[in-house]
Length: 95
Length: 494
Image 1 (cartoon, rainbow over the protein chains, first blue to last red):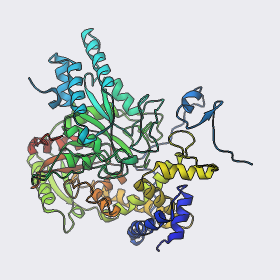
Image 2 (cartoon, one colour; image 1 turned 180 degrees about the vertical axis):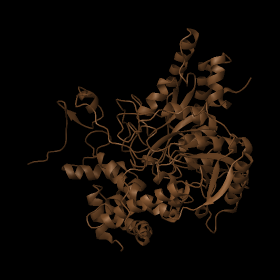
Image 3 (cartoon, rainbow over the protein chains, first blue to last red; image 1 turned 45 degrees about the vertical axis):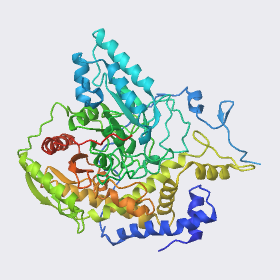
Image 4 (cartoon, chains in turn blue, yellow; image 1 turned 90 degrees about the horizontal axis):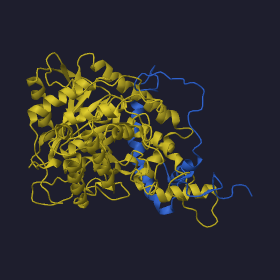
């Protein structure tokens, strides 16, 4: 299974990374090399094997349902590229 | 008088307590070395004032007879992947340039609470993705080591913790933090002739560490000696309710229990780690390591890890998949860079911001991850990789029924020249062939220097232990350290 220019552009779009045509073209052989190499996993017999979900056995903890933080609006906004009136500001989404 | 910057963490700690020197003298010594080593590009931000502040606090505490923290008087370097309150944290990316966290990562916070001071934020591969420290937005880190052929080719300090490894081997700091996703502590340690341990997954909190691949990322120390690693790891480890994968276990007294007597221990030698064409000097070093462990009283047995050849392709599905998800947070809205072309809408802003903020290797991995998780391919790639990962972990479980630890090479070669492997991403990925399997299985693993190759460059050995058995890993590394007597250091050219 090899990927073409259209697929690379689709992946870039799904990844929300804008790419020029030249960049996308350069990525076609690169991604094909990597994906072609990882495809060897297909030859491993995994009959009856459960996909791994946790490397070290651990239990999920529950904590008391109480507020443990908050009231830090200004800290949360401190690194925003654009913050206005105590909110994150973004370009207009709805016309 | 002894140069204080030649001392180990243990020697600084003990000498400071004994009154042989002040913490301020130590901090000033390292600050001067950092300031004089710009050519290595090991630091993204230098914080001499932080180092002095902690040193003065330590001197004052000592003068007034207060209880001293375990690392009082010891300045260290902090990999720029750990969020540090009030000090820029970039993950060596343009995306986070100018990001100043309003909180402290758990691991760095524990180190400061123990009295350590910060010399600065250490350079790394961008978002910890790389094996040579050539993907940093802030430039390549240069290894202080050079080949003995009279040339002055700039060599790779390894990656991703290349700032840490370069700074420690050049005596810019006695120890530093690293993080290890597929070998990012161990391979740079091997390349620069120092030690570093990746503990069992879950020992060190990931809270406040810029995330790459969350099921693999682990913090750990890097330093010149095994004892120093034990000292730092004790401080860095421990349960943290803010990390859902943190292990709720007491932290063992690794330093107090160090012992290089390996009587009764069985060392497994995985036969799949000796492929045809393994570098002859790496192979010879491995044989020497086997003899050293036998000399320390251990019995050596051959073991098999049949799925070893699938570890790297498994890693290069799982790590990019997790990265594509983790790095979705960089959207130009909450922190970091924003690129808003004229008239752009929200979606265009995301795409422009991410095109601007991420380097080529980061983009490559996000896109590979996006592809393997996309509809129609998820089962063939991602689910299959998670199943093979289970088989790799099972290989280790079965092998550890026959042995207590394993000895392997750390990297397939000594350090290479910058630029040498950059053209082919796959060739770079192959550098992690010996380190990735233990990462996939969450096991503790440590790099320790063994000697120099014929080009005069350090080569290392790797110890892999059972889950939670860092003590045996440290003890075996100590046995090698005592027998290897590695004292080589790079000649100062910077």
